[in-house]
Image 1 (spheres, helix red, strand yellow):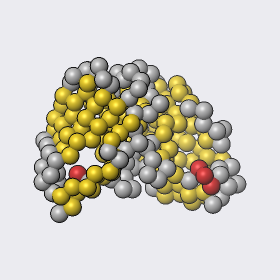
Image 2: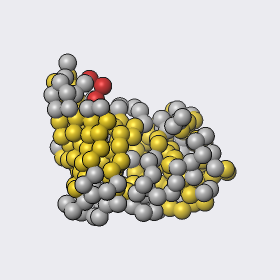
Image 3: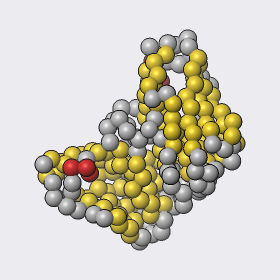
Image 4: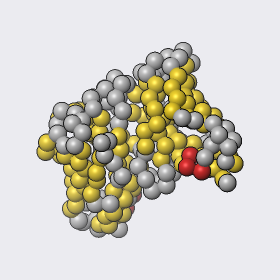
Length: 115
Length: 109
């Protein structure tokens, strides 16, 4: 089973709202990732969690706050977002923490619209 | 610095072949290929770990020339299901994948 699940599938929020995106995997993977993808662009890495610890933050604005409560779960907390933050947010996981040898498996994504 | 893919778009008829190229100015530890259909998640196709490595899966194969930091994805006897955006991505040692800009492949009946 190589499934990564994400909820919700779609989210519409105002600029003053607080919302959260959720990602789950039950493959025993030790690394989890958040990516942002704008239309017709490649995914851009936001955060990497390795063994439940934040290992990479790609200079993401503080209005995005990641959390990894356990090895199977990854959240992305959203607060005071801007319309330009509207995008597809993808979660991925990999068995280990070295992308040179590990495959990342992607979830279906959350389509976020900020009004 | 992201890998550069060429061509940007390809249009094929069913049964035709295509090659998508990926090159990097940075040394790559590995090359990963993904296909993404509209509105869906990227789906892993294959990973090439060593220079000169070639891999194949049914009618889709790939090669990696480590010396030139180039990889190519070969699609033979294309099917309608091959349509989508193909991304190559370069792997580093610390968990980061950098994706190319993508190649849009359209297969017509």
